[in-house]
Amino acid sequence: MSSWKAVSGTWEDSLEGKTGASTEDAFTISGQTAENFLYEADIKVSGDEGEGGAGSLVFRADHQAKNGYFANIDALHDVVKLMKIEDGNIIVLAEKTISLDTDQTYQLKVDAFDENIKVYVDDELMHDINDGTFTNGHFGLNVWNSSTLFQNVNKGE
Ligand code: FRU
Image 1 (cartoon, rainbow, N blue to C red):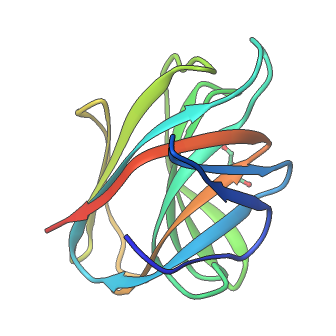
Image 2 (image 1 turned 90 degrees about the vertical axis):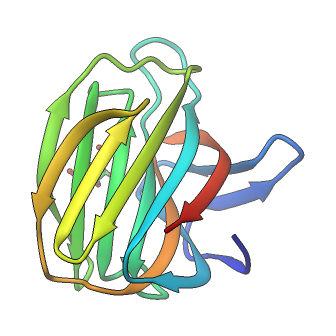
């Protein structure tokens, strides 16, 4: 994945991977776009017990992440959310409670095919919904209320 541009927050590349840090929602957006794809990353949210926040895969987004979808693991609230951003407003499309720890790596995967969007954590299906708002757009990453490491950020078909 190439030509990343930080839209908000602090994003750093290291040998380990890509780290994003922000208290508010922050995004980095890749120059690559796609309609239908698999998109995955290994995500580790830093923080002590009861702290930390969330890391997300962003997809079918615009340059400024004002429109598009994102799926997160939220280690503060122990949830996996699938969300949509429309004109900058976040709408939660689906939410599932699972136990998530800070300082632990989880694989998050999105399978988007036409209107169907599936979200997996460690290959376990979390969400399977249909939404036709956005059919194409940029890949990206999001952090919220944390410093979060992303490794093996990959897209497939
Ligand atoms: C929306 C939201 C986002 C944040 C996420 C954390 O419900 O608060 O702002 O990225 O949830 O789970």
